[in-house]
Amino acid sequence: MNIYDLYINEDDYPDLNADDAVRHLSEAIQINTTSYMDTSKIDYQAFDLFHEKIRQWYPHIMKHGEYMEIDHSVLIRIEGSDSSLKPALFMAHQDVVPIAEGTENDWIHAPFSGDIADGYIWGRGAFDIKEMLIAELESLDYLLSGGKRFRRTLYLAFGQDEEVIGSGAIAIAKYLKEQGVELEFVLDEGGRITDGEAYGAEIAIGSIGMYEKGYADLRLSAESYGGHSSNPFHGTSLQALAKAITEICDHPLESALPSSIRETLRILTPYIKKGPLKEALSDIDANEKQIIDYYLSQPELNSQVHTTIAPTMITKGSDAGNVMPQHMEAVINFRLAPQDSDAKLLEHCRKLIGPDIQADFVVANEASRESRFDTTGYHCLNNVLTHYFKDIVFVPSVNTTSTDARSYEGICDCCMRFEPFFEDQKIRALGVHGTNERISVRAYLQGIRVLIRMMDETCQSYVLI
Ligand SMILES: [Zn+2]
Image (cartoon, rainbow, N blue to C red):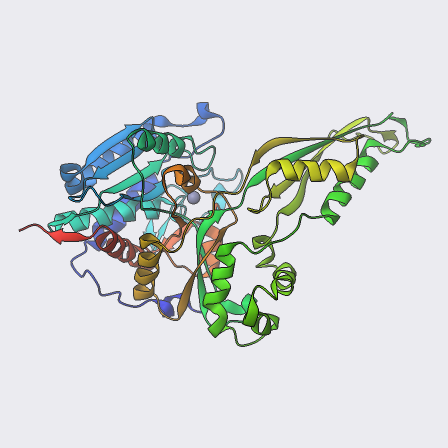
């Protein structure tokens, strides 16, 4: 699949200033807004500079909107003329992840160069997710500069630390809640494009994340006598841990089909021409088990229907081959499906491993609430994407990683995760925290068109005369 073959209507908005849009993204990448767990390592002056640039680059937004900073996060509000319409919120995060140590020289263009070369804009943040942040600003400024005004109030919200703890989004959501704001929809990063192969569908699929799986790290600790390994009569702590890990991995919690996946299957039914799903979809309820089994057998689909289990760490072992370890710890990472609470997971694991092994969460967040897809925001996003990309069907789906969007669930029942920047698989893979992160100018500009149209339509713009 050549992703660019899917692009259509690239000649919309011919008066869009593409050079400025590209230059702004390039400059935004040059401002190093890396976030770290250890906040003393964060360069907050870079964030201040970034805010100064935003105020400078987007005069129409500054003129017609209200610009606020909450700590180092940014909230912009453009008031609509009809207060009976719930506001829309477009999001992105300002921060980027660090460059992995030792990889600095592997970059074709330096990670904070923002170089524009070979049809790409290069650097950390180009694909996660400064392109969306700048594209939202470009889109809004473009509409306002053309004399458009909105009936629906529109917010832009840019958290400062999505890559670490997401406190910026939490603070913005709290502020909005205190103001009594209830949102019509939220649009944040996320989603993905795949060919339909895993489903047996003969069409590309755009998955819009309508909820996020949860995240939990479970720490297991085991004690044993230790001592010389020539007499391991009681077994070792490593042995006990290995057994416990195997028990847990061999006994996953039950799988289920959340409503977003049911809707996905309903939408895909006419496109599925081969494979085991084809027959099963004639009656999703009656064939639920068969469908779940199929999902579980597919590398691309399995994580959508159950809580995944990934043992990731084992620590405090013995330093010598002939010495038995005494106290050992392991961590298993779970991505919780919506049907499983953290309490249920903990109880399940404790029952499997017995009382001799300690099991406690280091961190545990349950899955987010499933967003509604019978909503203005979802329908509009779907229509706009279909206007700009052909031979692709959009479906409500799950985000298997976390975003800031979940922070808005308390004030919004339609939190969508979908970034409208379509690149081929190789570029996308680099974009997710990798080396040589970049975005093509073409994908970036097409994403801006999506956002302009999305803002224009959902916020019911009109021209001031
Ligand atoms: Zn991101």
